[in-house]
Image (cartoon, rainbow, N blue to C red; front, side, top):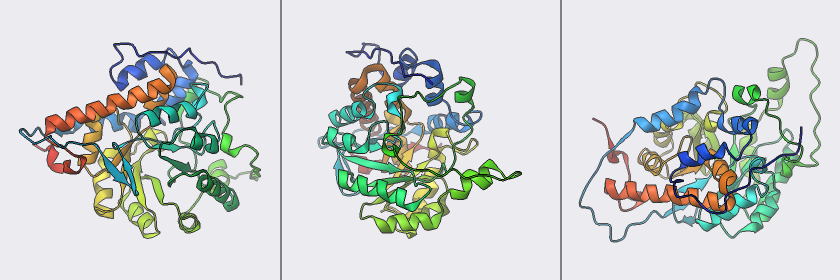
Length: 369
């Protein structure tokens, strides 16, 4: 493993960088190939990764005309926080892989566009530094640790640092089979670490002959429903449960006291062969009712995708990989510009679909012919 090398970020946005696809295309000039494959790839054959985008593309919008836009707005309220728009930056690990500022650059870009930032347990900058870097709203994404005292330590740090909610990820007790990253020879550089976990003691499980590294090793310490219930009971922060792709799991999470659900297949990076997040969203919304916050994560690349997610029941969406592409290309400026592009696309979609506010977007805005 060697120290990470970075391409020199742009100091201004070129005139032909006009959508998130342009950022992904340009990012290959700023990110080394193995790292790019680690970021861009999904699990297995990328079936679920591709399905996320394909399923969104198959949804058609319904255009409605002559609506009054004199009081139009993209504003929403989420867990008691008023937000200017429904575009959230989702938790993405190890952001110093693409830029020396890492999560601090992303936080600056999010604040410039009034976007809520969800900080990963595996951030390459400690959560306390990210928390005070800007005044923008922030939540903390939590991976439950092998021992409860380790998990509780992270929760207390997030509480003290002023994070407004926890987002506990439950769908990757082990990593998926990320073939593209392995083929490219990706290894984590020595200077990029999980800063929040530095100094954490770990006791590796010793396996006897014939035991499985997955079932008898990694999965033996994986969290279960009682751990989620314990976590919710240990904090006054609202807890969003991320990685739910089943209506029954959504109902059970809410019954245990979860504040909301994130419908997510981990960007196609966990179990290959899952449906697209957008395909599961309607049944999760139906399962938890109208009042529970539900977020959509997976495949959002256009403002029209945001509109479609809201039409099918999402309160807001999470943006994942595009924040890394934008950060690599132009640092904090790139992240802010990427968000501005998405918001402008959302506003154009709302205008042409005849929906002056987020609250007026619903299933009737999609064509079902």
